[in-house]
Image (cartoon, rainbow, N blue to C red; front, top):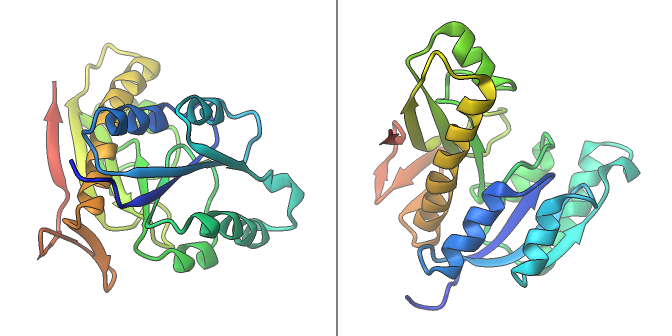
Length: 217
């Protein structure tokens, strides 16, 4: 594989399990990313230790030190722009992004949501899916726009729900799926197969009206 050219910033707030999947798959040559920096809004986030172990630069700003969301986001961008990121991966970054930030990095931000969007945006998706008796659950990689969890969908990992499992058990299975589909979608972006243009996602040159769906068992 050629030298990775897609400078990638990964934003986290916690343990960084999705980050670890990016680290592992990059090290194994499965994805073509240059993991340039890991940023956290929480100085005690374990994901920062994961990054340091992997030799990736880390940065941290505590959002509590800023007057409002946009002030913090402008400060974050000031840090990230020094790394000239081609792609920003939100990997458990527990902040709602300001419109300014989304516009500043338009078409470059990916997020993953633990549900089959547009179903179940927001929080507590696993329990909500169980309570509703859904047959299928999973996770969705999407471009970030100013609409929360509403950007163009790229890739979904889908699995059958076991009605006897707990929300924690279902969450663990969904996370396993996330660790496969999120790096894959980022790899598509890095290779130029995936792009966001004129408000829509395009994949291999065609309009991506519906996400690519992978089933897991």
